[in-house]
Length: 218
Image 1 (spheres, rainbow, N blue to C red):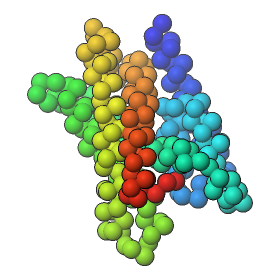
Image 2: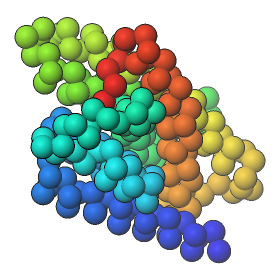
Image 3: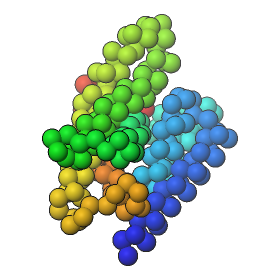
Image 4: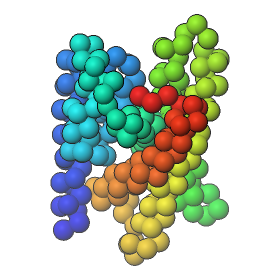
């Protein structure tokens, strides 16, 4: 039963991503990195990502007034989507690396996942943030944009990983007598849930960063 449910949610996620990919191809985002962000969110948020994309993300130049009228909660949601996409991408890449190499840390595969995925999530999180900041502030230079990206993304990334890694620990030690493997659909369904929880735990951090002026609302 769980395998069937896993395939269902994975299918909805992939279909949502495909719909967004087709639409951003026809209606590119003003901020280019968001052309990548929205499809990634589609994978783990599924129909919710579709709704938020068409309501808040699909803004054309002629609809600038609509964009300005978005509430603060919507802007924080979009900013959190941007942060979560970079983290999720790094985490998703880290899974097969750990699986194929068979590395363990302190005798634990889970700790290896934590370490590799955190490093990659941080790397891609900064890259995604850099390409949100630099195009709007090219006159300040790439180094300054990189510094701002680190300031803007570090706290939100830590908050994201707390939610994600916390769920991974529950999956590993509580929910299953034998945890699912990366070759099984159940594993990736659990990852979808982990990314959603990571999004939820990083939302307050993004809200705080925006309020303090360390991060711009998108």
